[in-house]
Length: 221
Ligand code: G3P
Image (cartoon, rainbow, N blue to C red; front, side, top):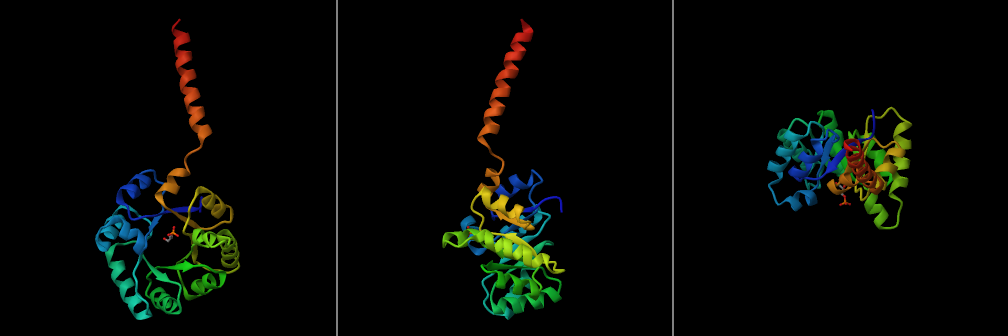
């Protein structure tokens, strides 16, 4: 891996296209809230995203039994070549993950808030686990401590599960995730945009533009 993979946590097709055009987006994650914000049909929007992005696109249903979760996942994977079924971190969810992993259907276990949950999800055969750092920070717990624990735990074993750092709220979360060696961070588009900016970069560009013009004017004298 050259660098930590970056996913977009969004279902906004225009924003996904813009970010993807830079060649820096490795996948997309969605959830029912993200889909609701777009006001579009779930299947239609996922199919469109799946056609834009080569990497994994996570899709989440609302089933609570293993049977329903497996049924939904089998349907979701028909929507595109790169669909990953997002499964909640529950006992029924992990039952579903075991069944789906045997069928070769990729899963992303979501709403992971503890190291023990992540450990069990990996053991069940999850392709990805999504610890939510921002929501832990919101209740005065340290989201990044969970990422440190999970990267250490997964590195101890020959385990193919990848960590998607989710509920990312600001660029510092992204940098901390990379320092800890997380495989992936999934970013809201506004956080993705913020990664590029620094006021000293803007100031430096302005200065160079002014000096270039001055140099040109001097050369003409
Ligand atoms: O996709 C799941 C996660 O990233 C949600 O983030 O901001 O609703 O806590 P947030």
